[in-house]
Length: 502
Image (cartoon, rainbow, N blue to C red; front, side, top):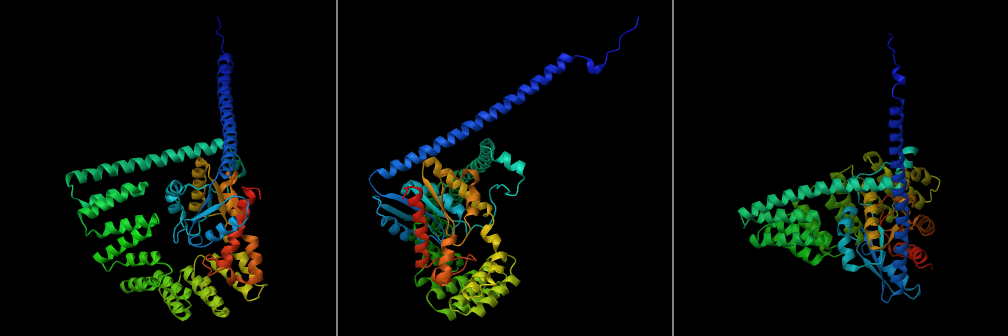
């Protein structure tokens, strides 16, 4: 009797079919789930934006002023905001505008974001105007590479992908922060329990709270450290910086001075007091004190030179900037400041020599190329200027620093939750597209203010020095009153057109 040998390929055909069907059903279920989630997210986004617009209309129909909070660095602080309020209130649209200036010199977007919730609770604005990022320097949070393939970009365009990525980043970041914070708290509380009069432990506890953003608790801890040890210089310095970051400048100044009473050789305290006294005659005194303690501080020489320059003492300004250059011949900022000092005095050849020397000495040449393009336009050498403008193209058309991009997106997320309108302002002469690219598909509801064309035409007609006080950004700087007025006018037009349809 022959035993029939079965072909393995033909065995259990129903089992194989059943298994394939299950896989197909699972894949179909996953795809259907993704489609449902994606549709829900897009519908939800539409509803949120619609409700946000309804909230804006409702807020302006009520009595009282329409509050606009301005965020940024030294190009905002004491600059365009008061011009903006004046222009908006002259528009006569039946609404009273109140513009709040929360710009801060030498800050960056990370610090601005840390203070955001505090500002929103305190001022309750209807709108945020942000022009920020020029002081940012490094990558801190994950940032998507804009040069991804078309297939990758296709998948990244889905709301579902963005939701999963956001949730994952939130979970991992919070887990790390909470774990480290709780461990640190247990450690410090144990120290305080064992030695209740340990002022250093309270100082550590205050720093933990400050890093967490719990500023009131941080202030209480620093004060407790000083209560236990009135000679704790570090506690005065930390308390001073806490007050400074919250714009409580009088309290900050008092704490820095207390620290100096304990240690007259604290160079950092003198430099911080210089920032707090910006614009006053005390600035040069504090800078000279800092330089007595550290004659090799090139940054202090730069600030001293700029102070002399602003008071019209050009010879002293040049000497200070030259000294800074001797100490640090590879620092781009010094070449820009010194070159501008020459340019504003119409010493064009000295300015040209300075900028070109910087091109040879500095690794980053983008801003110096932009500065040379500005210089040649001022000199009337129109045929040469485009060559250097082209070399500086990365400055105008490249992507923002990853830190800046991430913080702009964070800003929008916070404001969306509170139904607060966001106005994103590009720096004068810079291309608006790099700012728009930060948000990608999530730019709905944002009002963008382009300052490239209007400033380009204005500078061509009136000259660079009529609109800018310096050239620290390479192709732009801090604005003069005329420059700030033009900047405010552009912002006002965008607000009136984008929100009030005027």
